[in-house]
Image (tube, rainbow, N blue to C red; front, top):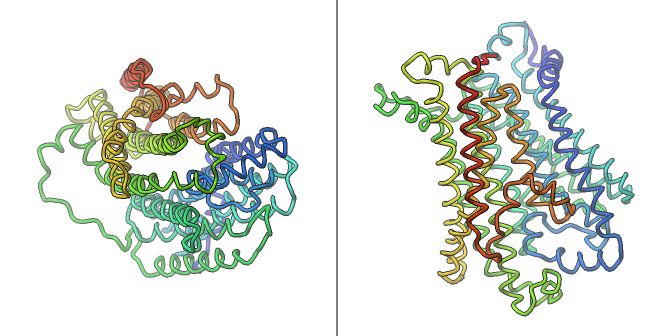
Length: 532
């Protein structure tokens, strides 16, 4: 006989033991990025004139409002710092806890390891509580790193504390969302899709509410954390909203855990056909089938996001009426309206392209997941060679990335046209989005090379995607040296719209991507399978 929480402490120790490398990597990666940004901003805006210029331009920019919300105290160096790090800090902590919680709940049930543990003296809720505690710990660490970085930068102590607390509570809230998602879906991939969708919806609702300055910001946990007004007139009562919703989500997760069958969920997978198609007998057909659900999820999410962004584009010129200084700030010259629209669209295109690298990397890393689960042995026991199997998975990743790129461009164009933009401009947006595809393929090729050369370090494939995101989102703010920004493949491509099209960098990056894939195929064929 055992209680519901029996063994939770031992499971927590096991989680920390298993993630003794993963958690420090998250802490150093995400925390280091936040710290670098927080420490760099005061040096960039070191005069009252620069601070005032930022408040007059970026503070009312539709791009900034959409991505970072309405940050209080934007006319202070603390408010500027909070505004600059919000994109990475808030999205980063939410995605981090989502991945970590799902990894130690639904993924453990799916793999069968949780069943072995449940055969011992372990309570029904022990794994859920241990995973929740782990997610809370990770969020607290990032919150402390953020607060400490702000204090080290000489920012106001109260504002730093409020911002760090809001960031931590936001992470804990989405850890609870991930727990509920783990009870709903029967697969880790499905749970990640549900929780990731919740993060995207919350982030987008806050951004749209901030742009329109309406009550929509109060429909999102991102809005509640920001409503604590760090570096403005600090207020703590929005904490009650975050705590109440988190508690409600935990209650739902506990109820579902006690009611559902072990390894089951609310969403049951459909039974498959009694006989498989001919295509499933080929590596490419099998790889396509395995990636189909993930690709559909990414396609729907990114296309809808692109439509929303596109609908915002025609409203951008209205900003010039309230803040004519923006034309000088962006160096628009005489054609201020056209320049600010180009700047907004260029930022969105880059942001969407960098986001698409997430699908490409995760699709390639499916090779590693199949290898660790021993399922790849059954594939290679047939006439399929290693090269054909890896080539099929990489082909699906490349084609899927291209499809997502086209769909994102089409979604952005559709939103722009529906909101009253000219049709010619909408069509041009699709071509501009495809311009960034070679950079996406380089990231995919790097992931393939890592899987082939160093399978146990294959998670480092995310490093190039992360560097690209930093260069796109924070490169100008941090004033990174060209040698650092050059690591990102997006930095070498012409910034369209606004810059003249140059096919040479694109051709070079396609060759580099092909070379990286070739190296990965060669290394994967020569090495032993790592079934650990």
